[in-house]
Length: 81
Image (cartoon, rainbow, N blue to C red; front, side, top):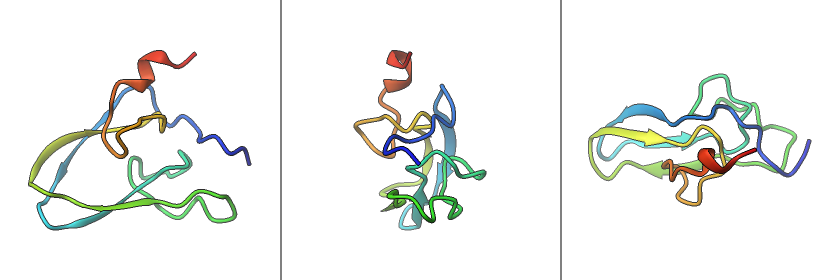
């Protein structure tokens, strides 16, 4: 597998997070449970980005896997070819 992630989507995925809860964000783009990790990265150099939600609410998480603000969308999908 390439050292570049698979583009899982070209628009952010809106999800509701719960304050204090841990989440595992998919960084490889292979997970069928986007934007969260389901273990499909096994055998690759990718690892999930585990984070704890600071507050409850709806956030836009990156689907293109090229954000500089992992796991949040920063608009990087707009610059992909």
